[in-house]
Length: 467
Image 1 (cartoon, rainbow, N blue to C red):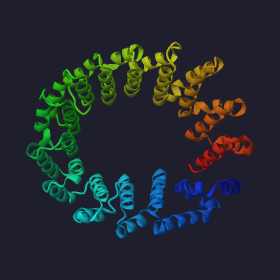
Image 2 (tube, helix red, strand yellow):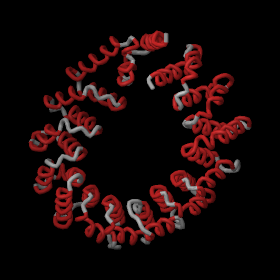
Image 3 (tube, rainbow, N blue to C red):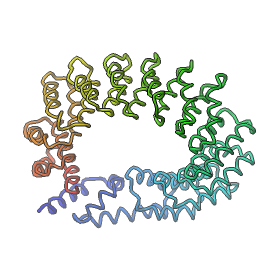
């Protein structure tokens, strides 16, 4: 009976949905529905997409690739690989490299290497796309071609080659050291422009090579160097994450330039020790708000319990909303007894802003849904009674993400007497908690008279059935 009902729903969806919408719907989800009687339609979609790859224009193929990206649908990968071998159209090749690079698939690396080898016969954008793709998949064979490009002074590809070299070498220590040493030599002896200087520094950081630490440290400690270059060097040392680079970052924490200070504090995450903790805590006292944000994020990354009093003060008193929000997120990540108490107070204090209360509730629910669901429902009902719509909607959204069996009665109340918004979120709660007991209620909501709620119910019913 259940399968019959699902078949009916899917049939209704197909006859009421325009063909273009069906083509852009998720094939992954549709393929799961084949057993429900929709196999022929799925096959039709596949065939039409295959025809686009075989015969379509660059615009049509680019649109298809965008759709596949959005869907995270990969069953056409082999066809795209074959297409890459037979086309020289820059737009198509670039789209394929981007799509497969996003998946970190090396399926077209030979084609990309061939493009670098024959780069004088290829469009510039095709070569640039190939360089970027080879960097993403970390193809070490591309190193030789990048060095050739830089050695020959091929300006049209220089920036991309510099940007990519460290990334593609990062998986191999010897290769990484080779890349870092090459880049340092290029920086010192080839008079690169300002933008290329920054790309070299970023690339050294991407390589992860300790061979770059001394070079980067010298840049950071040179107060006459441009701020943008020193900032890039701080971030690169953080990316390498070796303790030998820590003194230069600590030096930057005390810079007169607020942007360098904030970057330095934000870059302390990979390092350990009392000196690091002290620098983070001092960051909370900085008058530049970005440094305080960086301190909150560093404390969050390290789950630094010693930062809780500073975070409490920032969450309650800071005059910059973003600082407050990052402090609350850090408290949620730490979630010690003191952090929990602070979040609870921020949540329950009705004089606090809606944003602060909602975010504090989110942190509490993420960490202990069972312990705080009842309090959240109480405050939700109070917000509704007082017609605080923003607060009410925010609390509803937080509640919809909670995973706890304590929500069954609330779902029952929302479905029987709640407004449309509460019914929408009730569906989320049901799926998140796998409350299959409510399947008959969802089936009732699929009645077309319920409008948008009907469509939402159909989607959520399918999700629940596929769990």
